[in-house]
Amino acid sequence: MNKRPLKKEPLNLIICGVGGQGNILLSALVGTALLNEGYMVSVADTYGVSQRGGSVTSHVRISKETLFSSITISGKADIILGMEPVETLRALGEFGNPNVVSIVNPRPIYPSGGVVYPDLNEVKEMIIRFSLRTIFVNATEEALEIGDPIYANIILLGSLVGVDILPISKETMIYVLAERFQGKVLDTSLKAFNKGLELIVSA
Image 1 (cartoon, rainbow, N blue to C red):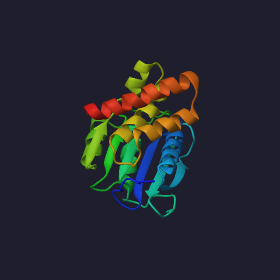
Image 2 (cartoon, one colour):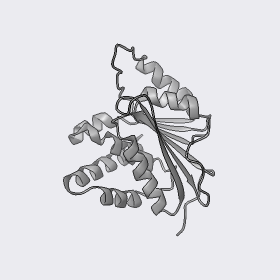
Image 3 (tube, rainbow, N blue to C red):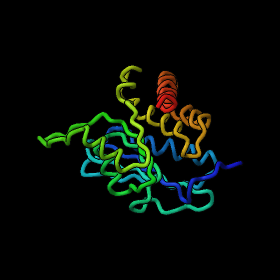
Image 4 (cartoon, helix red, strand yellow):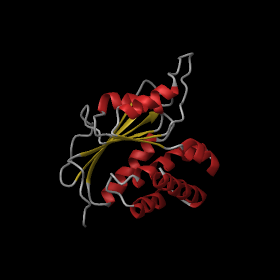
């Protein structure tokens, strides 16, 4: 199998959001696609205080030859896929560096219990400041257009593949989606995935 060159060894992807957004599904889909492409992959998911509503961070580490430890070293992310803006900023604070690329769904998830959410424009400005490149993908709004906000994560998956940093082809990811889903769910997932690709092309 002809492997595409990696930017570095290992290449580190962070997927961050809150419980219920689909982080774990995304890390599983990406990990499976990378294995199908012939790479060594380690995947680990870490949880905040509560699984639903708390912080969830998924680590995906990719190598041509070596199986690295599962958790990314501080400051060593190459790409951050942020499903929520404050969680993206949190991940940048721990794993970011001057060369990191951030793909971000800018739709906030407001905390319960009277906790004040930071000014969204300020959060977005800080994400841009601490990233080499920032791409905002309005995944939630696009998923609502498709018919269900649950597909925001698959739209982000399409954008992640479309930015062409990970060594995953469109065809490989479509194959993985077809293995995972069936029927109407598969049809909508493919529509969402292709929408994510389109959004990157037009960004």
